[in-house]
Length: 112
Image: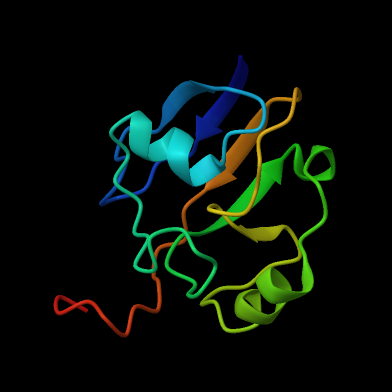
């Protein structure tokens, strides 16, 4: 198991969290499995940016983003060099520290 530390987020994880993920599991699945309800409007098919996270530590341990993910990341709110779509970022053996951005672009959501 690999530790994933989630920095505090007002809506999804107010206190922050330290969770365990299986190597090869997506960051998004690990968050959801641990009751951190990150948005994922496209059902994790790499077709939106709602599950965007910023990997504050451990970014280099992730496999590189493919071209499709890079194209969607260009549309993400608050894009940073260490940004990833959590549905595409697979946990390795190194611990990660992730931040869920304050805002997301979700054209399908009625509450945004």
